[in-house]
Length: 202
Image (cartoon, rainbow, N blue to C red; front, side):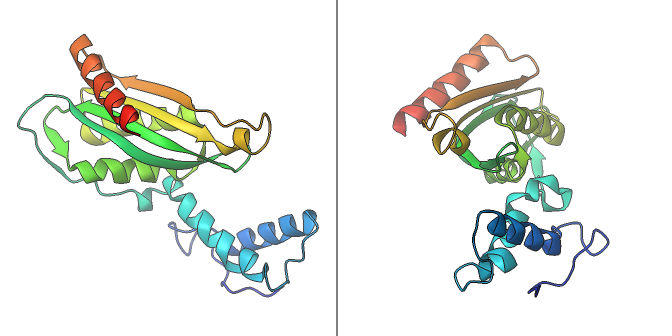
């Protein structure tokens, strides 16, 4: 079996996957479904495309890929709300995507982070094999730890291709929520109002 990548090991890098194993796995899967991995159409699929794709889509499993969460002194402890963050992840049960939108809010203690970093952080967390419920909790607990925030609220609305393409073969939306700390009723209402406005615009 020829390979377009040299063998990579854990000692070589902590920011990549083992491309040789990925190539063997994809090649075997193609053979299992009756395809010819060496055909012109599929040679690049197992040699490069799928291994490279999974290297990107599993970045959330590697600390080296985590965005730097540069913070600034907080001038207020009012709730910071960010809605409409796109999320794309992989279901650990079927290796099929689930995708949708994340809404989040946090009450800063001493520091705030640039709003673009919230989007980058959600993207990094989502790039792993996971479940929607776990990912929602990981985003909330991770942000609380990164920002030392008193309160974090996260809502995720996602469609799962393992439902839409197989199983019941119906497209639907699943909603999960996670809360860290004790938000006031006013904070909950403000967050939900922002979520509702965003969802109504989509």
